Length: 440
Image (cartoon, rainbow, N blue to C red):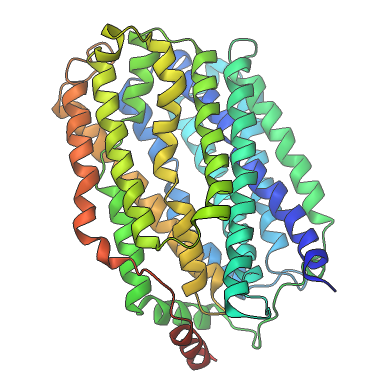
């Protein structure tokens, strides 16, 4: 079978999985307005809820180990994608069908945790398929790296496309439908994904077969061995720290734009569409022109660009652009959405790097560990953001200290650059193959 034919079933499964993953912004936009307007939470509570809902993602290594070691009906990727979709469906549909008066902050938090548990399980299985497909034998090591990068770029584009549509429909729908109606629509979409996934047989994906059937204990042992490799552990540590050290102010900016500036939800939706379109374009540009650039240089450049956008946000809050004649909604549309997604630009080149460093047999475990580290970093970042907002005196009605908070945020963003040497500039295939033989 040709390589293109072999990749078609994989791309169908991954295309749907990552598209739905990107489309999750659709109900989450409704969640933000539901919490703010329906449950009347303040900016700090909103941000804490947004980040605490990511707690299931911290356990991704466990899901990865289970996916690597525990087979269901002779399959160890497709069933976990289906389970993840089903768990998400049974979390969003109850929220949609409950009486609004019976929904509390605690109740919605539990269902959001369940939703993210399902999303985490599905993401781990999808990420593992991407990593395994990149290990398929090809005519040369360069073509193997290229294949891995192309598949990474494909799923990146699929996720971004889902994000574009989700944000566009979310921004329009929030003014026309209730948040619960939007929750119901997404729950039904997840049920459709579940039904389409369970009819796929994993053998049709032509994934590499493991030489041994490793148990959970063996998978843990392999993961610990891999994490002892300096180029892997240093890279993951730096990458997670580059996120966690930045105090996130997303909840505060959401309140500033909607409560202080009175920006309409449709404008926010268009802004987020611009951001997702930028992610989509980034995937295409990276795949065509930037794969040859050393990972350290590319990731460090993105880190600097993030700080530049934070300074721009500070000027926006201080009214500098308004004085220059640019209306607030124009800045929100053109730059706010891009500023929010810019921190995700680093994930694509880093995922390609880790996929190339990862030895065969523990793709799911290692990729899950990476995503877990990122999720934990986002939670820490969110908590630091709440502390920073309190420190500069930002509340639901007071934003005079927000420019100072954004300056502190920008300074924190450039601090990790002093240790960017932790990221290798290239992948030494010989060392990777040697470690792979040791594990066998």
